[in-house]
Image (cartoon, rainbow, N blue to C red; front, side, top):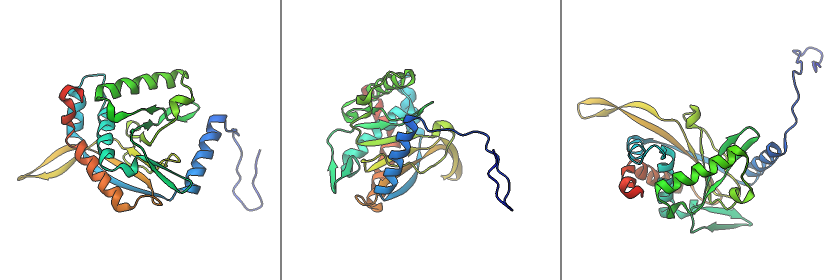
Length: 236
């Protein structure tokens, strides 16, 4: 079927795809997010050497991402305005750090929740993330696994993406995007050294928090990430 009009380049439809139920839900929520929130994204490059050392020291069942989740929780402790939702004109800050972790499946995107991250060691965070990953991959999760998040993290670094603009998961106030690890040169004493870095992208709702607050939050998160070997003591 061609939809070319007079004088226009011809376009022949190769295939038409209707959105499935999950994709329609995702589309509706993303549209709602952009309609209701004022999205701003702040980015920061972070030295990842300590993060990698910590993950390696904690064993093969612990990933860099698990250590990052613990660092995120510690940063939220100091900046609770981002561990929050905004609904009906009310900014609600939560005691628990319930982190939604975006996961890609054939039908679309789901965000299972690791509950109360601040109360877990890195190894416990890793075990819970693995458990949820298996549930999602096998399609055995239910809605309770997807509810109650206070902030979301999405990692496209594993797919080779350096930096991106993550979309806030309403009614949350913020979402953290994680880019890939890249080795970069930087000045050192009388030489140039190569260190591994990653980019963190924080999208936040400007109705609730300002850019300066987001910058301070990222600075605190960077500090925890760059000192991640602190988490190797007893798997803290």
